[in-house]
Length: 365
Image 1 (spheres, rainbow, N blue to C red):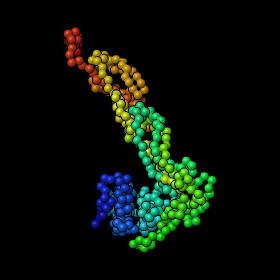
Image 2: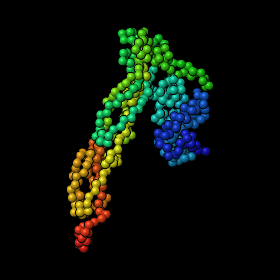
Image 3: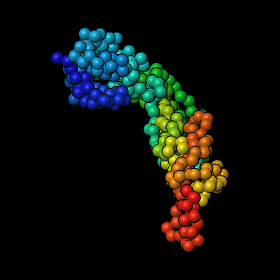
Image 4: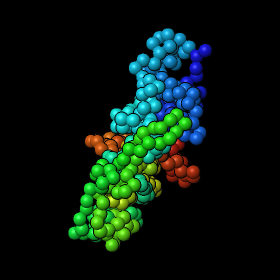
């Protein structure tokens, strides 16, 4: 009987590859045999399912042939069970263990202290990512702006520059890890003794031992201080978009690297302009004679006042396009367009003179 791999992973058949990847990570964490919640058979089943639907080409065959998929070539070229377990336990290191786009070190590393896929190297801790919300004006989003952002976060110590050592003091290589920052440890599990790599406790992953700790930060290498950053908001940015500033997040201390800072942009509304993607939409009102005879009027655009030609015979609610007067394309050349909806103003009441003129016009039409 054919297995329902989507059901195994707990996703719908219409799930995206990203959703499938997230489901695999969650299930793999839960059922890994070396965890208390582990279940080796279910762990095997989850890995088997991901080897198929986690690969776009194999997934297409599985969706097409269903129960006949295995007869049409099966998995083909996937990692076998021994490969998965060896990589998930860090045997030989996580560096090359990539499983359909998922770094097994990132998935399983935190179980045994091996270090995740985002680690910057052996024994290197990574600081926390943080997010700051910034509000900008409508025109600033269109043309870009430099924004000053002030926040309080963990930064490298001003005195020791993040090393944790008193300036001028010596540092010696850690004798426990021989300067590697990590040591191999043997962990007893239900499947026997498993060898993995963990951060060195003696030097906390630094690879060096400081003879004299920094007095200012007590050897931590980090302190909470205020930071002011100048953030360049690019032209054409959309409401809700995020800008990533690498290495501007929180600093974890000596032997670590800072996380990232995400600037989430919120764009204020405009009393006259409405934006859709890179196009601008506005409305203007004209008189009945202007609609019939045509005219040239001035309207507001992102570039200031511009002339708008009203063609003779313009209908109410007709849109006129001004090319290239919309919002610049983000990180690209060119701009969107400006669309003007023309509203013909029909008076609710007309005096005798106007009525007579309209009656004469009606006889001519």
